[in-house]
Image (tube, rainbow, N blue to C red; front, side, top):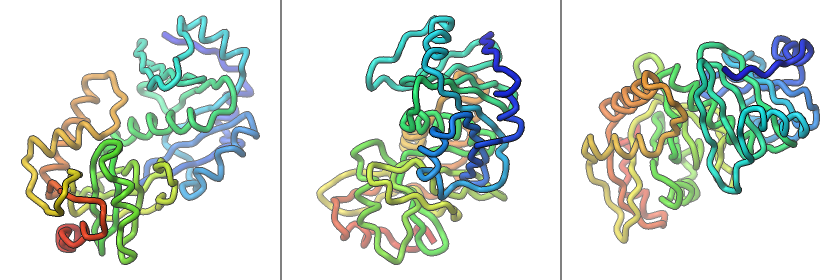
Length: 295
């Protein structure tokens, strides 16, 4: 089992939430505690739309100490990740170690407190860690973090799902002013009172323009298919499941939680109409998206 001994003062930061941020996305709360005021200052404005006063269901202490980071990396038998290497998850007893560029974090499987050690102040690595934590927390709420643009169309929401270069940000930029873009990168989908809802997240695309802190009931899933023509066609259940699963964040090694993830994805595609959206990147694409598909 990984055992990093934190001194009494450090754990007091977790307990008292001093110099911390309480983040809330779709009713899922996470509290970040920063002994380093400089690190806190560097990320407060980025997460500002999602900061509130409610203490999160999960707390994590974010420490910066270059020398200690080097020592602990050796103690854990790890080496620095090479550039552009995605985060690595290592399961050890009842804890999960998340290894990132210039940082690692220890996440308790059953508890509500975690710890992260950074080599230096690194908002990019922190953002990667937040994506991992929220993807894991979302499973507790029958939720998924999905690579998609989320748009409010009237009283309902629509997801435009696809990997990088599939047109998510393009669709967001071409959205008519009568609609509201929640996000152009990662949408949170959570089941509330029997219905799936879509929420904006702070995890924006390159433009960082679209980060709305609210949600609406989900009315339709559109699976992005770049084409020379604009048209819709119903998507089969196997195709829809494959697209939702392949474009959702999953940072789990536990088989039970992977099953929960798959169960939530299946329930989503059975509950919400799914369409293949064939489109070319012009405003004309919105003409084929009938309002009643998402209202």
